[in-house]
Image (cartoon, rainbow, N blue to C red; front, side):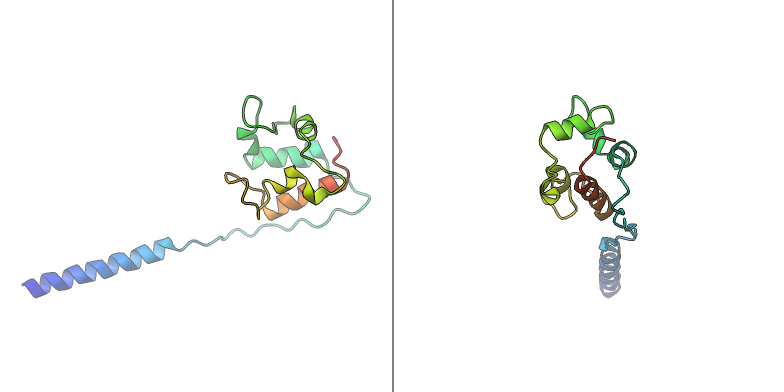
Amino acid sequence: MMSIMKNIFVNCLILIGIIAFAVSCQYKFTVEPVIPPIPPGDTISFSLQIVPMWADAGCADCHKSGGQLPYLTADVAYSSITGAGLVNTGVPAESIIYNFPSPDSDTHTWKKYTASQAALVLQWIEKGAKNN
C-alpha cells in the first residue's frame, strides 16, 4: 500500500513538473511589421502618424495633462516635447523622445516603442520634426 502511494506521489510530482515547465515557456508570436524608410520627398505627419501611435500604444494614458511629463495627447504633444528639449533635429538619434522609450532602452520600464514605432519616430525627427 505504501509503495502504491509513493508511486502516485512521484507520478503527481512529475506531472506537476511537466505542466509547470510547459506553461513557463513564453514565446513572442507577433510578427511586427517593418516600416520602410520614407522616401526623401514624403513627409511624416505628426498629427496623423506620431500622435495616434502614442494614443494607440497607451502612452497618452499616463502622459496626459495633469499626469506624467511629457504630455503626449494630441492637443499639447508637440509643444510638450519640443518645449522640454526632447527633440534633437541636429542629431536625431540622440533625441530623448526617441531614445528614452526605445525597445533597447532600460530607462523607460513601463511601455516601450516597438521597433517599427521607434523607426517612425526617428524618421519623423530626421525629416525635421515638423508640427504637421
